[in-house]
Image 1 (cartoon, rainbow, N blue to C red):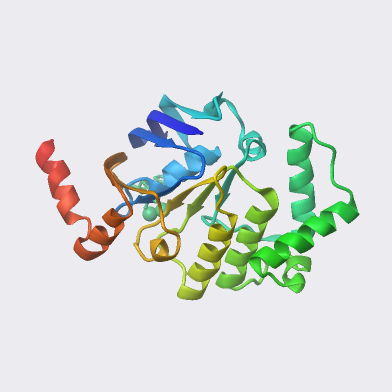
Image 2: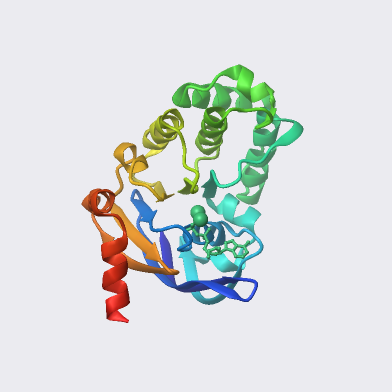
Length: 252
Ligand code: ADP
Ligand code: MG
Ligand code: MG
């Protein structure tokens, strides 16, 4: 589904990603961990097609298509969803209207007919139930005055509506409180399926108590320096990153 090879990217003239190799198969959940500043958010943003990053080498194939040739909007339409890093506030635009527009843009791109008001409401009701979100939240301006937990629930709801093939979640360094973690994890777990994959970016191990990954990768200085099964996350929680950094530095 996703095949990243030798991906190199920079911000300005600073190289951040220095050759990332990663393959994600349908249905798999991959956790990306690593110390602060190692490039986790950069990787998530580069995959989603955020501007400010220059890809200097390597390739990314998504469902056989060259992802790097596509705009952020096209990537979203192809089924990539990036959550959490910067929950945007849009004054005057309700979540409902925002989602209706986004969903119908995606359908247009895929050559599907737009959903009318009745079809959209039906889908919304169904997905609201799935992620336990309150109607009142959806009629308010997107993210404006939302609590941390409400923003997360809202993003998970957006994800449930857009049904991405690949969801990328970036927990960010500040992290989520325990309630927000549960909300996120519950939503992600409900949306898990053999066709859908996720890349879960997290500095700490705790999110992975709730979203159990198939693989764990440690990113350090722009490279994946260690990969393993879910148990690697427990080892990291217990021992930190220093032992891996020591291994890497010794090998240079
Ligand atoms: P992580 O998510 O693993 O903490 P980031 O991807 O946020 O790491 O950052 C990787 C490196 O890129 C860090 O050294 C950081 O300082 C740098 N960086 C991130 N964003 C910018 C930016 N907008 N301009 C310059 N450097 C940046
Ligand atoms: Mg950081
Ligand atoms: Mg980050």
